[in-house]
Amino acid sequence: MRIDVARNVATPTGKFNPMKRSEGRHDKRLRRRDALPHILTLSQNPIEERDQYDQAEAYFNHHLHTQNRELSEENLRLKKLLRENGISWTSSQSPSANPSSAKRSKRGTSIGARLTRASAKLQGPQISEGRQLPTLPTEIQLMILELAMTSEDAIVDPLSKLTKQHMTAKELARGNQIAIGFLVTCRAYHVEGTRFLWEKNTFIFTSHHALRRFSTVPLRFRESVKEVTFRIVAKYYDDEKRSHSVNLNGTRVKLRITPRPKEVGLSTRGYKSYSWNQIADFLDALRPPFDPSHNKKLPRPRLLPNLESLRIDFVNFPKDHLDFPGHDLHKLASHDLGRTIDELMLTGLPRDDQGRKAHVDLVGLLRDNGLVIKASTTFIQQNGTLTVKKEAPLQTRVIRAWRAIAQEILDLSDDDDGHGLGLHHGPHGHHGFAFEIPPAPEQIGHPESRWKKRRTVWKRVPISRDSKERKWVEFSQTWGTQMGPYNADLDDDDSVDLICEECGEVHDPMIDHDF
Image 1 (spheres, helix red, strand yellow):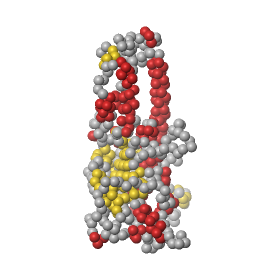
Image 2 (cartoon, helix red, strand yellow; image 1 turned 120 degrees about the horizontal axis):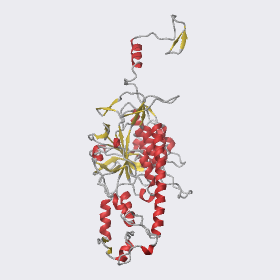
Image 3 (cartoon, rainbow, N blue to C red; image 1 turned 180 degrees about the vertical axis):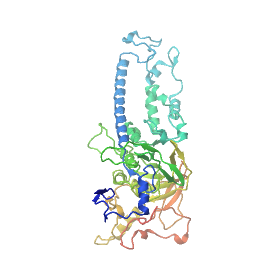
Image 4 (cartoon, rainbow, N blue to C red; image 1 turned 60 degrees about the vertical axis):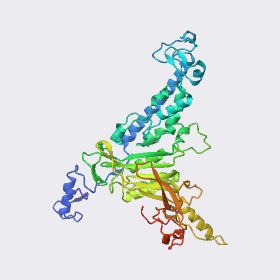
């Protein structure tokens, strides 16, 4: 008696086994492939799963962050106690328990005391030997402070430790972007400088942990953030020593693999990826953070309540290599955060069925009449850093601009009995028509349209992927696509295209078209 390992069936030795296939040339290749586990075959794709080691490390670091915050609050209380008793906490001056025994200048100000605006006005320009107050007007000081706290480039992962593998060589060599030392000069500079820091800069987040830590910024500053960039670098793990190479826009790239030990028990083993779940974690971080002082009777504000423009850079998302996005991405983008922003740019999204599924889900973030921009791959992670790729023409489209026309058609089609055309919601009918959610505001200052009958929408679109300069582009309100040169023969009312010829209902005319 022997055991057929392939079928797990016990058969008499030497006798015919009807369940065992005849071993041909194909079966021999399979046995040779199984005998060489270090060779990656083309059909082997990673399993989408959050890495337990990364999650445990993030939880550990978050615990330390909480301890640091408690220690900082304790230090502030101790400093306040020392200040109230006239004792300096600086090392350059010996402490004095008696306020009256501290050295004072001719004007009666203790040496080493904190400098405030009130003391500056009362004491004049000279308060002690060798120390002078600024003689510049307050307005000039604020202008200098604003320039010092404003960066020309976006700040990467504020309040968090930088990850070198998620940055370009230019960003790593950039150095300090702002003069952060101004914030510890005095209380007035700290208050004004903090406001400039969060209101005058743009930010890039390369991990959802850094985005969650942004919730420690007071709400009044987070409300001023209008645009943000997510740089999502797909991560790959393997418990076997083997290399994985993929094709990214014509470039053969060897993926950066994080080794993991083989798990014990029934845990999933082998080649894993953290890609689509990472996008869901980024979006989850945008949900309302916890605030113990918030009124429980009112809805909690999101992390960035007034966010208008979002850019997502997908890094190392190969075509036909990843699994399909899970339901979490659709729930977060189209429901929890649905119709909350006006503009969405997606770069590096793979052009396959998986990428199209993610695109459909992410477009749910846009309000009606919102603008979606698709661009080529921006970065490729290679040799420990990110490499910037050459730009390609942008693809733009206005999302759900047809809804306003559809509402007019429905209103006009109602007869005396209140019956008229129906409304087909398409694949997302469970969302409802949602006219109660205001659309993206109309952008003013655009040129006059040459189209007389066709209804159009104007949008300011970037001239290239990484450019801040914009130009006016005209889109069809019915189809959402960019209008071509004016043609009098095509200048007709195309709103009738919203009425389906098959079902007679009103729905998105682009429902069966790929973008």
